[in-house]
Image (tube, each protein chain N blue to C red):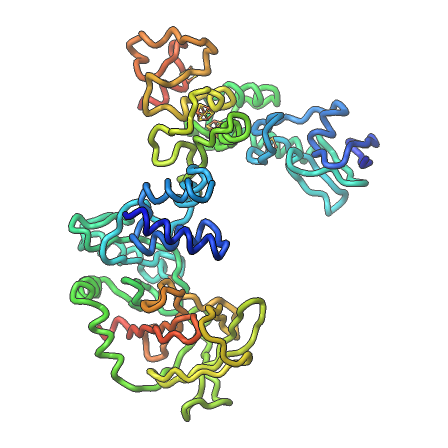
Amino acid sequence: MKTDEVLSILEKHEEDHSGLISILEDIQSKYSYLPAEALKLVAEQTGRSLVDIYGVATFYKSFSLKPRGKHLCSVCVGTACHVRGAPLIAEEFQRQLNVKASETTPDKEFTLEKVNCLGACAIGPIVVMDGHYFSNVNSPQVNQIIKKTKAGLDDAEIKEDRRVYLLDVSCPRCNHSLMDPSRHLDGSPSIRVTVSTEGEHGWLRLSSLYGSFTVESEFGLRTDTIEDFFCPHCHAELKGASQCPLCRAPMVSMIVRAGGVVQICSRRGCKGHMLDIDGSGL
Amino acid sequence: MITLTINGLEVSVEEGSTLLEAAQFYGFPIPTLCHMEGLTPYGACRLCVVEIGEGPKAKLVSSCTYPAQEGLKVRTASSRVLKARKMILELLLASCPQSKVIQDLASAHQIRQQRFRQEHEDCILCGLCVRMCKEQMVAQAIGFRGRGEKRSIGTPFDIKSEQCRLCGGCIYVCPACQLRCTFTEPDKAICGGCANLSPPCVEKEPFDDMMCYMQPCVACEIKKD
Ligand code: SF4
Ligand code: SF4
Ligand code: SF4
Ligand code: FES
Ligand code: FES
């Protein structure tokens, strides 16, 4: 950990008047965990007491006080995934990686964690590896997921990215289609979601052509704002578990009808996105 | 001044007082555990429940945190209140039976046994020590860590706190009576149980890491295994 790196994070947050959690989130995303020295520095600089900061850091499961591995593997054991056999998958990961939940392999490659619901119950059991979704996972696939991760998930993605095809997406919570045939973008039905920023609610339509960034919105185009995306049917927030690989804003996830999950960056104007085709396509 | 009714008696209290303060001022006893004068109310133990409102809208609230309101009807000893209080005491007995404070409260409420799985926690998470350390000792050496089942009290990173001034305030207020902030360095720890400035137990072999002269000390014995 470098003192000046933490100081510059603190400085940035001083300007935004943002709270402790955003500071900790930034430190965590820099080092993949919260170093003790960094927490002490936060305490010194912000005038908060170290116990309070430590309390917050241990309260939220997304914060880790131990260094994490290169790859973060989250196995969902929420109710919906549980009834579809997630405990077996979690066990399989523990066996193959030879670590227990919330531990890191000795070679610092993988950190395994069990989580409760990643918001994509309809296509569970879900495993998220470094922000990439694997859906309908079964135990034999565990080995393949680990192998694929070692080989590099992003390589696999670039190959897929070159393909141009139409996405048919639905809400990960209620499974209701998000397609809007009444309005076409790029010559095909658009994807309609509800967005909100700064207290304003309205619709946003996205092109369903994978690779196209055409959007239309009720508020016109505002760039560089991070928006909250909601399902227009069940009003669930469409927040994914990962951060944008380009700008670190939260990702928005939607289910692809053909199987899999597509994630787009919630920052308007950012082109960050990820596509994970169903586990069966492994 | 605010006028309200406590157990049918019309009383008036200053604005900003809690129901507990009002009731205590007029002599209605309410048992408390996590409340202490001079510390901010925290509402953790729920032992101070009272019933407010009437008919189907009546509800139980913790009097140590509920502010007195104009025209409020409060009952401090209705059958519902007594039942809830007894249940809370049974649960406390189930988690921390070695606590003298809890034992006394239970016996004062005619509780002779509890019906739950017996545990031996060394902390009931009442938060008295945390508030003591922060508000009276202005040290903020100990605090809550973790969440849910794993919630616990201690110093950041479980190492000796630089902020701790070894005042013993936390041990003094603790209803569960355990060594707190300094337990990683037993020789620097202060025992509050015996209220001796130089505890005579230091030299005793069976207690070489716990300073204690009560033989055997229930709390320490349980902690050993
Ligand atoms: S002994 Fe230390 S932790 Fe306990 S109240 Fe005093 S300063 Fe706080
Ligand atoms: S250690 Fe004692 S005073 Fe502190 S929260 Fe636990 S029971 Fe309460
Ligand atoms: S008797 Fe034991 S538990 Fe009680 S204060 Fe002394 S050392 Fe602590
Ligand atoms: S229970 Fe696994 S995604 Fe909801
Ligand atoms: S004394 Fe009121 S909740 Fe504990």
